[in-house]
Image (cartoon, rainbow, N blue to C red; front, side, top):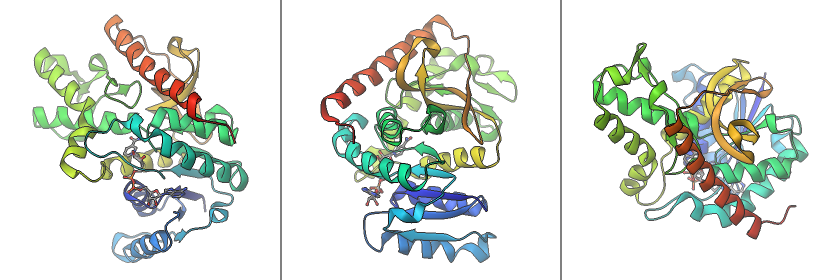
Length: 312
Ligand SMILES: NC(=O)c1ccc[n+]([C@@H]2O[C@H](COP(=O)([O-])OP(=O)(O)OC[C@H]3O[C@@H](n4cnc5c(N)ncnc54)[C@H](O)[C@@H]3O)[C@@H](O)[C@H]2O)c1
């Protein structure tokens, strides 16, 4: 039986645990610093097993040693946004949480694949890579699956079609300058340009970019978690089933798309070894310009990181 550990038993972590267990993907360990919280949530999930038809064990703990020999570790620990906050505002607090989690992962689960979720995503993924000292293929950020699923949903809602029939990809950093690729979006094989006008497409693109913020403004005390947790579990599934799934994810780039030494959302193949390939898509000049803008925002974040971060 494979083993997945989820760091952080908060809203996103708990939702990811539920989906991983429900799919019988692996035995699950969930770690949090708050005493009793991961134990309570693990127990509560386990009680859904008979009705939901899963049999894997779900254990809650406050001890990082329990993540030992995990195949995959999902990092969700850290503070979330409140109204008026940018994802970058979370950096100072979350860097230190990411550092301690990454060091524990390197110690107890040295062969694992790390899926970073904590925000600001593309910068925290960099901290996870540096602190684990894992090869780049084994540290991947979750954002593109979520942002794409939002874009797909908005297209489906607009056209009143089955959401699963909509294909679309969002690249770039996980911030308001993310890049929903309109030229690659389709419904049942039809390009969306055949189904709606340019103004409507632009409105859906903008709504996708601000999709997380729209939920933060309603919630007031935190950020989205159902779709983020499900998206992280989708990536765990692709790894454990060795799918070589073609999905967008934040990867450490070394010259691809013209960027070096930053994490950025790009199309990858995700499988049992982590990132098996970064796919080079031919982007339109407009899309490439938007990706440049998004990469510049991530580079700014990395600059801020360098000013507050001392490697462990
Ligand atoms: N990448 C994405 O697309 C995406 C989407 C949604 C949320 N997020 C981010 O995910 C993170 C979690 O969001 P949430 O809504 O679950 O927040 P939350 O506050 O509900 O949960 C965070 C949990 O982390 C725990 N924690 C803090 N320090 C820890 C440590 N050192 N070790 C273990 N656990 C620790 C807290 O006790 C808390 O239970 C936030 O940073 C949020 O911005 C990312």
